[in-house]
Image (cartoon, rainbow, N blue to C red):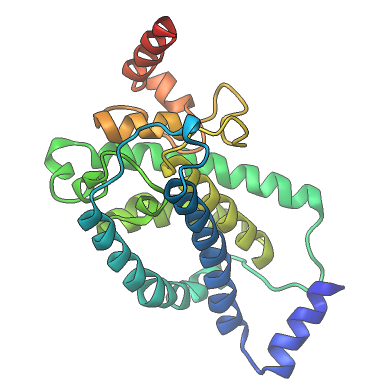
Length: 260
């Protein structure tokens, strides 16, 4: 299969260990969607395309954007590579594997759904914790420097937040299952696309993250940043609905509908 050829080429011809294969593959699975999506979003802003779907006419201050880019360069070029390298022994212990045979489509789908459910639950509660007055000003306030959101803001966060509210919710599901590494990379791509979409500042009607009524979406997350209240979920709004933390958002939507 194509996967077996790639695995043989990387490990035998190039002489890379599975450890380094994981680090490089993880970096690619992260960088490609993140960079391409954000280049696309910036192009839409730069050339005033699809303005009807913009959630705000305002754009973040250039100084903040520059600071965010500096943060991302350090994070992507150094921190994330070190993190992936350090996590592989733990992931290997939890059952991550480079099996010659790829998992069936059914296996990939149920595992991805499981990862989404676990991530959404842990993200909701950790995110809500970060908004506690005793915690917010020390940690989460950095992320909320972006009152109006753009795609790159999705990864602009304090190191404690990056660990507690980003990495742990993201990696916990896979650590419970022990997936094929390719499934893990697909999960990473999905999560990157979702969070960039949520921070994009655009409410695209074709977004796959707003098809169903219980999904999250960019409009919810834009409201969360702009008003700094409620709507703590990622993929779904179920926890917000159950805990009543999206009441203000739903009232806001009702007002907009009445005006229209």
